[in-house]
Amino acid sequence: MKIRNKNRFVQTIFAATLMLGSFSCKDKLDVGNPNAPTIDANVNTETGLISLAQGGVYINGFYNGDNWLGNSYFSLPWGYSELLADNVSADASNNQVATIGVANYFILDDGTKVTNGSPNISLIRTYNTRAATGAGNNAIYYQWLNMYALNNACNTILSLVDKIPFSGDAASRIATVKAWCYWWKGYAYASIGSQYYAGLIIDEAGTTNSNYVLHDAILAKSEEYFKLTATTLDGISSQTDYEAVLGQLIPEFTQVGNGGIPGKDVWKRNINTMLARNIVVNKLAPFVNGNPDAKITKSSATTMTAADWTNVLTLATAGIKKGDIVFTGRSSANNVMFTATGGTAASLATGVNTSSTFKVQERFIQNFTAGDKRFTNNYSTATTYKNNFSYTTRYNQIDGGAGQAGVYVYGSKTVGAYEVIIAGSYEENALMLAEANIRLGNIETGLGYIDAVRTYFGAGVAPVAGTGLTLAGALTQLVKERRVALVYKGLSFYDNRRWGWTYDITNGGGSYNNTIVTTAGVVNTKATINYNFLDYWDVPADESVLNPSTGVATVNPNF
Image 1 (cartoon, rainbow, N blue to C red):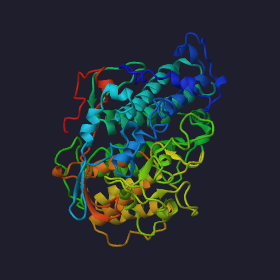
Image 2 (cartoon, one colour; image 1 turned 90 degrees about the vertical axis):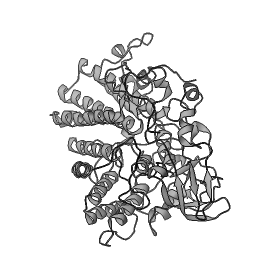
Image 3 (cartoon, rainbow, N blue to C red; image 1 turned 180 degrees about the vertical axis):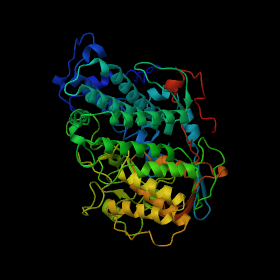
Image 4 (cartoon, rainbow, N blue to C red; image 1 turned 90 degrees about the horizontal axis):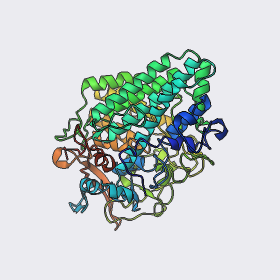
């Protein structure tokens, strides 16, 4: 049974102190009096605080302690993103994964209309109760849970850092810890503001309040903390002490591949990418049925302007470059962050589709360009999974890929093989540059960034720059590439939302020219799908019922 009280999301800091064995040596943590544990008494040394700061992120933020599907933030909350984006489906009953991504209806090529008897919005609201949370059925609970636990962990660390003696250049070491906390607070607020209609700003350890604010205000707080991270980094004078502390904060087993210890300038480029992301994924840029001028008539978000795209272009130009270190996660033989087989949406989608938890969908596969090596290296048609709604799929995601050298691998169940990109990445930043340029009229420049990402992943397809594409043609390429390059990175639903696809057709939304395979094996390629999903989720009942709002609505009033 889950603990359910109004402080559920701000009282989990001790998990970080109790579960650090795999990340750092337990004997480095002064445990104080185990019979009367308090943060102040138990964390009173530099190594103890650094251990707490590491665990506060990787355990409080990303570990699954609530018995949900998979075993990390990257398996279920990120799994919902892929389900809602129609990249994967599921038939498991856990946590509504089989139902949350089902569209309201679809229309096949011959005009046959198939309607879902349990629409997404009514489903979410029916199960947004404390009882449903206790039974593991409240889908919107989990992201809120982890991100507020992460935020509070950072609040706790910030309340301690100035009280503890540090070695070396103490000012630089303290500033490094503060930058770490500010970064992850910016990340947590970005996640809440991008997913929920309203949220809480909580910047003191162990506290809560009932002054809910709209998601835009949460995103503004995210921006504030990301920028505070950058100015704090600017004030660090000792590179040696900075690297020493950051090297302990970031788990050693993640310091491979794209992971590692970012220099201050590299970290600031990561910040710029996240600032650009906050704008891109939270404003509408409708591209419905191939129309760059599509309009969504009812939404909880505003529409991107030329000024917004110019701002994104500026930030992304100063964002992550190819070869930059980014923030990553990996499985390890002896860690509590996540397992290789169940810790990510990617691993849950890997294997034979008739037995994998997630099944890679036809709507995902249709985005690969003919001849793309990423497709041939990662997907087979060995078996077909059949579903009576729209989830029949001919495709299996190959564990570890088919062995083509230099080609990206989408999923692996081997310990340490699959790398989770936790925050921004080179490919995301490059595709934001592509989209900003295309939207601002610099089509050839934008297409060049799409080509660069495809080269980076070893796609082996012909360039699209220089082929005379129109605005609609260029955006089609952009959409296809974001769908296949950014899958399993927690962004897929946000993209479908901002392009207008998740909105009701009567409001200008919907998705067109889709591949749907029937259980009889009929392949439709022009199917229309009306998802009609909530654009921003309501506040989970575990918060809103026990902590009623004195501010804005906690139920999205636009739906």
